[in-house]
Length: 496
Ligand code: NAD
Image 1 (tube, rainbow, N blue to C red):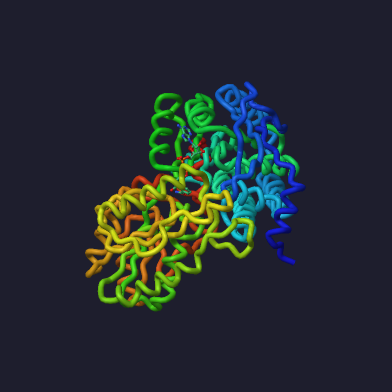
Image 2: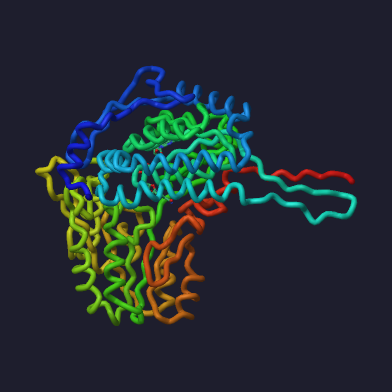
């Protein structure tokens, strides 16, 4: 039977929360003993003291990762053997799904139903899908002259460090560690200081599944301390990042200042969701548009934060949108009926409220939400907001808010809509709603975005690559393309 809020509270009482780093197969305090308090945005409760690791810990973790990589204890295993162990890891995540879901929700505020039905299974699936692929990808024999044999082989890069955000802590981490580990690298994960708990727990499960000690390490701590130390480290081969565009740029500087490590960045977004008058179902489009901004408290890199609506249907569409947003009501994140949980921390809440103010100051019309709510819970909740009358030059249409604030922009022609959609420094995702097949294809082709959804918003699974154009990043997570980030290609020429 599904758990109710009281059941989850009971589970919390028996939860043993681990807050230490995980290096060389064991939990350990930061070298200097530093910790920070981890509290829940759901209601302000204290969760754990978490190790605040720094350069000394990064040094140790990199040495351990390098040593295990070179020992071949993991890198030297047959792909089928790594597959078996990674699938065992995915299975263990599902065995512990309630514990992980509870940690994820309490740590970063998302609704418990989402953690349980989306975050935990998607993490296990990312690991399983990638593991299942790894003994089915082949290297190449080049089209050489008769007296030559040219082999094109992929090799693991060595030591991979990943720095990830707090909005989907487990999923974002798994999109990095699954392919990096599958090809044989050793791995260091730096979770966000705002959501370290599931990463710390998963490290133990990885060991239990059979991933040798030293291959999967977790360093909780701040970006400007341990994150920076990893990014500047001369013996990290690849830095895989998901987070803001500003920090992605900084990491590229660090790479240039150190060993020119490859930096793969999945960064910010300001995605356009374009609804044409000939959308197959305007109500469905309105419901999807509401979900596109309110799901996960709007803390989604692909959030459909700019809604472009064709003028001729706007009056019909807007009441549907306002109505659809009512399904997205903030509530206590441990209540299984809740659809909108808590914003990750007070700073983020202030930031979102600041953008609501800026929107009003610049002349957009706030027609729904935009206020803090449920303050009596001690948690950080905000009513999803809609701004009408936005023009694309406004701050709320250009900057990534990373909260539930929707900008509605009106257009008259497809050309105008495309120009507005692409008028952004970002290019992560976009949606198009039309029943005209040719228009859908032409428009999708014109969009400068890594994912395009037609007559839906946010479709996708492990089979297709995910990532951004422009300042939304480089490289791709998910699918077989993800292996490219964690391997080097070697050409071997044999004279026959
Ligand atoms: P952030 O950039 O502030 O932090 C991300 C990570 O970088 C954290 O672990 C942080 O500790 C670390 N960090 C911060 N400063 C650092 C430094 N100087 N050196 C090294 N590491 C440092 O982002 P956030 O607030 O955690 O997450 C929100 C952002 O993530 C949004 O911009 C969102 O669009 C983006 N995001 C992108 C995707 C994607 O796939 N493109 C997915 C999810 C989130």
